[in-house]
Structure formats: structure tokens, C-alpha cells
Length: 334
View 1 (cartoon, rainbow, N blue to C red):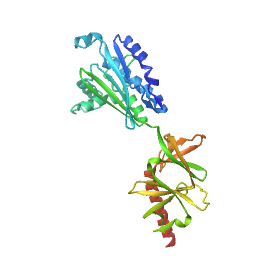
View 2: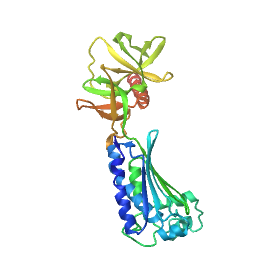
View 3: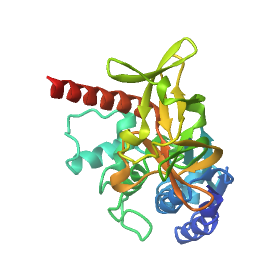
View 4: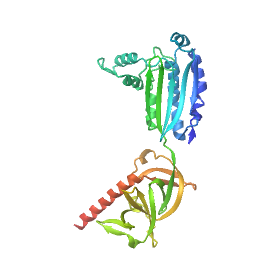
């Protein structure tokens, strides 16, 4: 996790250079630069933010003469703000410029054939039209914006990061672009367990209790393996069988971690318990993103990679696998 100040620090000079070339007076205000975000997200966020800030200075902020005529101070303001809200990071680019002219957007969209001439656009639909590919309301092409490269570039980049971008504007008062991004990296407490040579982490918030049981404590009910915990019967999932790992299978005892909630719980059978540890979740990429039962990965202190178990997915996956195996056994017997 790194603070967004790593990229926010580049914007004072950018705004100064752009406003100078446009002969405008612009004051940049930065807030929330201590907000932390995943380093990999920060790197991909710079270009979309540069595009948005340049857009605010060029399209949003009026010339000093126009601002004076509108009864505004000659110097315009652009606010670059970061804040966190639950598991999301929110970045806002707000200017006090002329806002988006909804009628102008409708005319341009009709002219380009994006919408039918008879279609009535709501204000929000008109605002979000600026994210359409190649859409621009610039009257002339400059080296800053209006080159036919619209904010669609921003939206695509943000969506690649599993985020969203939206815009709100009030004519004569200004525009606000809001970018929401998930915290793809987080620190959780995990219970480390061993399966053969592999180490897995189970989020501690999903762990109810752990037990050491004898092989004789395991019973069969409708071909499901279960064991008794006080007056309760808990289903068992053998993780080595589920993940196709050759477990130890030796010893006089099995270790069982009971996960879930009071109304839906299950026992995960593992070879041994290692202990609790704070782990950093790293998202899985490419072909591993849809691995069922796995939420992500972490790198342990000795450099080994440990997969983090997604308990809710695992409960469904475990029941489904056990059901399939039971049906297969029954059809074989028949």
C-alpha cells in the first residue's frame, strides 16, 4: 500500500503549465493525499487522472475575462481529492468552471449519430455522454484536448481496474468527475494450515473453532463424512481431495478447522495447523482469477506463496463435489 501523494505530487506543475499555455488563472487544491492504495493500481491511475485534470483546466475553467463577466473571481479552482469509503477509494476532480452544456452535448451526439434526433436525453445521460469514444465538445483542436480523444480512454482504464467513473455538472457552477476504485490489496488475519507440502490461509473471521480428532470419530451419513461437536453434527470436507493434493494421511489424528456461521458451518480437514498471521491479499490475475474456492494469494515471510481460501465459495464447492462423488459411487454400485 502506498499513499496517493506519489502521483498527486505531479499535478501542481501540470496545472501550472497547462493554465499558462491557455492564458488562464487556475489554483489547484489537493486533499487526502495520505489515502493509501495498492501500488499496482497507483501506477495505472496516473494517465486517467492527468486526462481528467487537463480536461477540467481546458474545458471547465473559463478565461479570466469570461469568469469576470460571469461574476466569478478571475482565478478558477480545481480540487483533486482522495478519500476512502469502506473497501473503496474515491477520487474526485472538481472544478468551479462553466459546467457541461447539456444542449451542446445533445447537438454533438445527434450530429455524430450517437443518438436519434428525437431522443430526449436526461441530464445524467448527457453528462455521461462525454465518456463515449471520440466524443468531444471542443470547438477547436489544441495540443491539450479536443484531439478526438475523449474521456472514454479514462473510463476504459478505470474499468480495467474494476472501478467506475461518473460525472456530474451544473451549468455555470462547475463539474465533478468521480472515480471509484476497489482496494485490491488488503491485510487480513489468517489461520495458516498445511496440506501436504502446501500452505493455505483461512481468514480468521470465518473460523469458528478447531479440533483434533481420531479417524474413528469420523462417521458416514448418506455417504457424507461427518463428526460430532458437542450436540451438533458437522459435515467434513477433505481439502486434499478437493484440491487434488496428496496429503500426509498419516498420524493418529486429523486436524479440523470449523468455518462458516452458526447456521451454515463445515469442517475443513487439514494435515496440521501452523498458527495465526497477518497476511497481505494479492489478487489473482489472468487465468487464475476464476479459481473456485480461492480468494487470492499471499507471500509468507520465508518467500513461499500461500493461497487464501474463500470460505463461502468453498462451502458451496465442497457440497457440490461431495454430492457428485456420492452420485458417482451410487451409479457404480448400481
